[in-house]
Image (tube, rainbow, N blue to C red; front, side, top):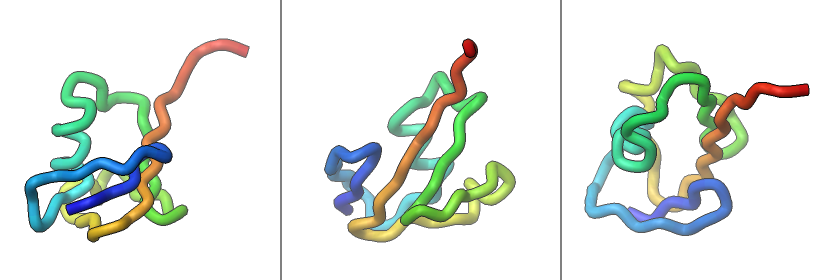
Length: 68
């Protein structure tokens, strides 16, 4: 499966991935304070386990930062 994550194309050896599974592969130790959008639609954290990404999806992972 080929996905575009934060403007970078990445390949995965999986036929289907939930958002949670993708995050476990990409950022296993930093999953608090992030937001995920798939094809410009925000996926609520409560849906990460049941929302599956598809081939060529455009995924944006945003991490919250402190500051002003």
